[in-house]
Length: 138
View 1: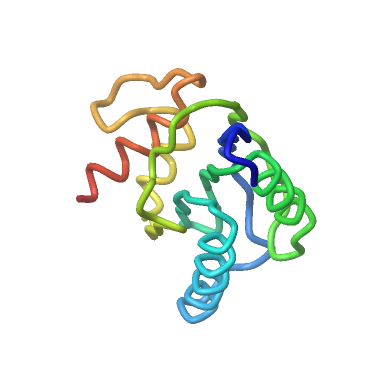
View 2: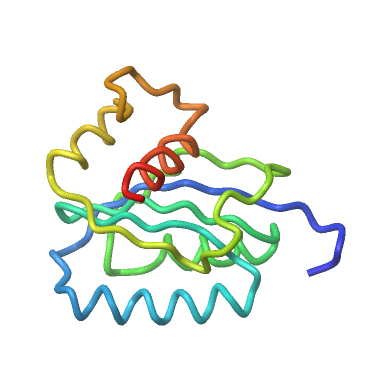
């Protein structure tokens, strides 16, 4: 990455081809954290009820390459890009991949675009959804 390469932020959702066991998720996270740390990528992964929501942020070329790989990954389908922006500051600076398992009611609320305060979320504030959710989990 050159020092002046723009930071790319991508948020996507997808559905697992099957429910993943805890040990499978741990293995996926270990590999992702190692890969991301090496390439300067940070972010957050939520998994619940057979669905993923992920924020990736980092050098444009690295995030774009990773996202292309994710879109081809056979462990999930229906990959939908929620937000893709250049030039935003990092939100998860200290996390090569933060992770939380989400229960079904919380996943339903997030998928309907309802914030922790019960108010509707703006699509342009998708990153805010993840920030608020992460903060609420403490």
